[in-house]
Image 1 (spheres, rainbow, N blue to C red):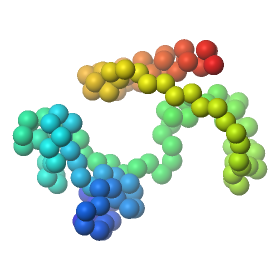
Image 2: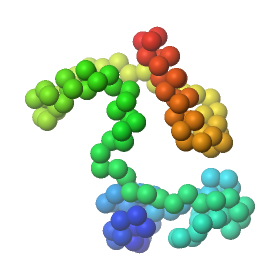
Image 3: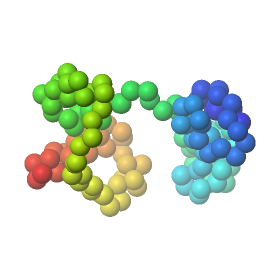
Image 4: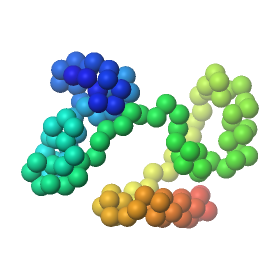
Length: 126
């Protein structure tokens, strides 16, 4: 099965591309129907389809915005940034109830601003 994003030939039954990690089987977000390749709308509920795109090879710019510049620079300049290192870390996981539904209703830039504020509040608390 060829990947629509990168044209890599994947084995039958694969759900994600082995080359770029794009979903090979696209499902409707409204009714969960499997969409045929190239579908622009769901044949069951007429909801617009989301086309798969290749996984980014570099982290998106917005994801690094949450790391303070001085810390990002220090990380990138250190030898361990290239070699890797093992550390014990504490991770904060926060779930925003209803966030997926809200994100679907908002403009991406508006949703990004909401998340920026959310992360600022969490960072202050940490």
